Image (cartoon, rainbow, N blue to C red; front, side):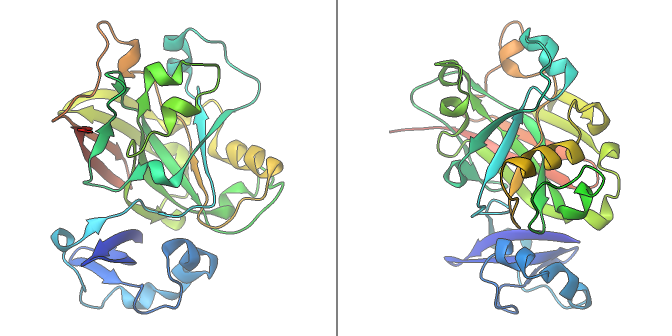
Length: 281
């Protein structure tokens, strides 16, 4: 099933995505957000609702980030061989991790904001892994049991700020730079995440195209590693890394500018689309 977060008439909610529209789960369950819904094992309780008429048409809502209020967003850098090669870096023994903040995210259809301070705004198509239950020191063998679902993510980067120091964070969490959506597809529909294909398009041009089988650190390994550091909680997001083809490593560089449209498509999940808007003040 597909689950999304949205706002309608100023009221935030979440719902079950069907061919006809969105069934509003927020008004049917006590859980106030999709994160709380996952924590309450909500997806196990909604299958019988799938035949209900849709409460909202797709064009009647504003999509929010799939999980608007995660406890943590853990992003992974340098996790495809092609991206490592284009950056000129060496493969590391352990995953390269950094954090995003929830306030840096926007939903499907909302504008990615190119900040005033930079003209080096880069796309990074990725697959987001949404955690479904609490776990600590999870084994790789059991890791996929903790996955609630998968979504598209654009970990767009402000490259010059990213390079201010050895820490990635300044360039990775400017307001309005992380696209997350349009929905999550529950893990039961994707039993083998290595079969997913990831493609990023800028104004219709394919700029990244890969298989998740090419990840350096697999999704189970990322879950095991991250859960060793601290407990993973329902609604936590692991953004699994971007493949080769980023704009910064092209000749000449390919930066996102005002009026562009960037799409991230993941097979079996859907397509995240965001216009790019230059910050005015």
